[in-house]
Length: 87
Image 1 (cartoon, rainbow, N blue to C red):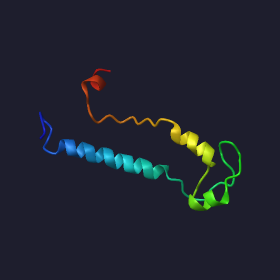
Image 2: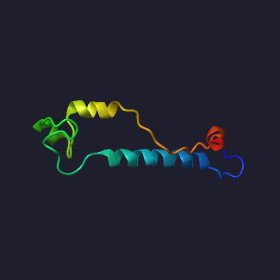
Image 3: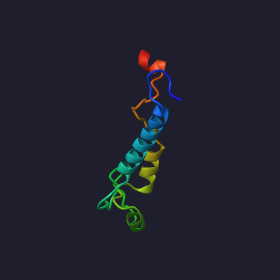
Image 4: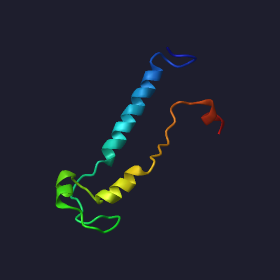
């Protein structure tokens, strides 16, 4: 149910767009191409099994774990909350 000037289905369209953006962002983060033999972060050799399992790998397991633990920040606010409009 849309309110105000929004057409019917506008909320679902926002949800669909958010999901699509998330999928595209995740696909863009997948490594591709020739992988590195040594980690770009620490310089340690990357095991052959890891290079075969993940195409385009550039980091060792330890450095990738550190990268994955960092909080991700996305700059799109489709909610249009009052708080975001007041800033």
